[in-house]
Length: 237
Image (cartoon, rainbow, N blue to C red; front, side, top):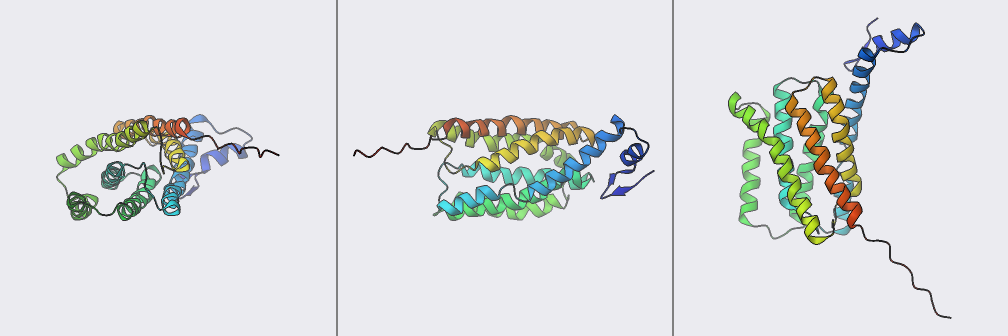
């Protein structure tokens, strides 16, 4: 029996259950992978919202590395373009679309609270606006496209390093959102599993593994450098 909903084949699993048997591994794992994939996509719609709200609430970007967030935008753009170009199922990459939109909004907010901006920042922003549509449309030489995708892992790594160094240098994570970092870490962890089940390219899997390492490092820094709540002094009678 075959029954597909949003590209998920429930027939195999439900057919086994109707016969009083547990679904076999080769049937159950792909089903779990698809469901988890769409859960990641759904969760990605709000993953950067805690970080955005924290900046707006405190009207501060203290401790945040602008270069880290700018490189994130570039990395998400390349990764999304590659997945679109190769026709991967939406469950395998859908979160990249929502993460890119939120990352762009986040950079715009950081720009707003980092006034005045230097000429270099404006030049880089305009260059991105000019080149991003071409990359997303796949109107790039195939060899160059592969090179860009191969470099996006290095871009994501370089996006995390400035923030990790900033945290280490200040012994503080400033306005970084714990919830956003936790969701990034969990998403990378689950994406390794779904990428294996979707038989995604090895480079995509390695990118998720790299995400586990870097996001895990930042998450541990937030826990390590968090300030203990101030103790209230007892009033002398």
